[in-house]
Amino acid sequence: MSNTINRLSKDDSLTPSPDGEGWGEENEKKTTYLKPAAMMLLLLTLVTGAAYPALVTVLAQALFSDQANGSLIKDDKGQMIGSELIGQTFSEPKYFWSRPSATGPYGYNAAASSGSNLGPTNPALVETVASRVQALKDADPNNRAPVPVDLITASASGLDPHISVAAAEYQIKRVAKIRKINAAKLQGLVDAHTEGRQWQVFGEPRVNVLKLNLALDQVGR
Image 1 (cartoon, rainbow, N blue to C red):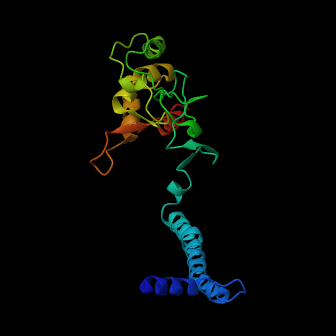
Image 2: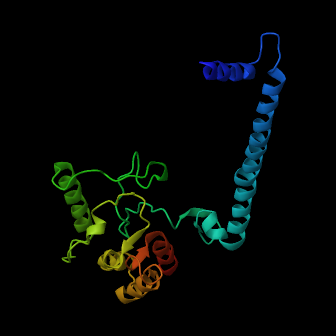
Image 3: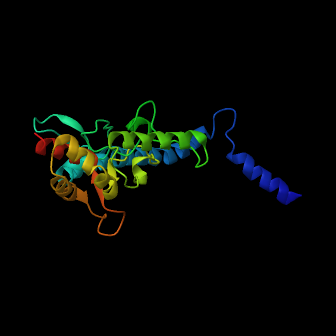
């Protein structure tokens, strides 16, 4: 019993009394903890919220200026016409066509990157693919080659700027006929704009459609 009374007496002595005794000690303890916490918050805010972003921005602009600014593509007049990272719609037969895009409300909308989310047995997907095949056939009725799959199906992102080498070569005869350019010359143009695997390992060879069409306009003038 005496031990219990002594313990209670010790605990009671730590509680500030109604007349204000002990409050100074309590405030001092709070200040001891709050001051370093506030200093740490300020330090981390300056380091991670100001110094680090500023350093990364400076290094990016100095070492990778093109990529840091969106990998923009300009025409021969210096006007910005797109980015090599985001595809564009080409529907005129005289151009190489891009991979279809299912972003809304319009194709290649970078603010709404998405696929169609349609399953392989969905009638809407079957109808859409069939219409794309028909559009390619209508643009080049004499082409009996199998249609590359990336010319009739949208990607998961809907922003692909590239098509496969097979998809580019499938369109050579159509473009050559309309522009009255030798098909072998166009094949060379496609070869010149074929990008290899990433670091020689990842992905497949591909062709940037916007870059290819810009070069095509230069050749076809």
